[in-house]
Amino acid sequence: MVDPFWQKLQQLGIAGKPLGADHYQAGSSLMEYVNYLGCSPSLRSGDIESTLRIHRFDQPAAMGGDSVDAIRYPVCKHRLADASDLLRAYPARTTWQCPECGNQGTLDQINWRKSAGFAQLFLEISAIFPKEAIPTDKLLAVLHELCGCDWTWFYSRASD
Ligand SMILES: [Zn+2]
Image (tube, rainbow, N blue to C red; front, side, top):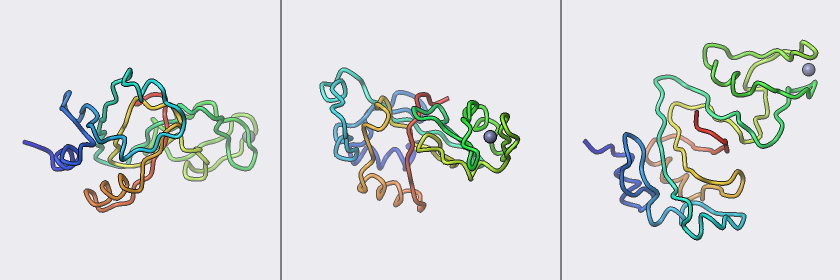
């Protein structure tokens, strides 16, 4: 059974050959759908094999948190040291408390600085150096058409 999501991505050349369940090689046209900002030398020369992976969840889940930039609690601006733990506990737990000053709130108040996402469906493109690539409007439009919802993006050092 071919998943319509992957079928479309393959048709457009965004995804290539399947590598496993919800895991595909990058297609030959992927670079038309992703803007590379830095020099990304290893990607350009093909040293790194890019792959695409879909993560599906039955209920909204959080991914990411392994950020390049410091994530800080709102208001007090103390550093959030346990971002990954906090995200893993979602959605069972949606609140936080700053260990340094007791300030508290909910996850949606935190500025994750494009290091985390909340969704039921994630499309992971790797390997990309953090902040050196952004999806084009064309890619976001394709995904919108496939799922009927708006997409955004974030950078994470790890997918789990
Ligand atoms: Zn604090």
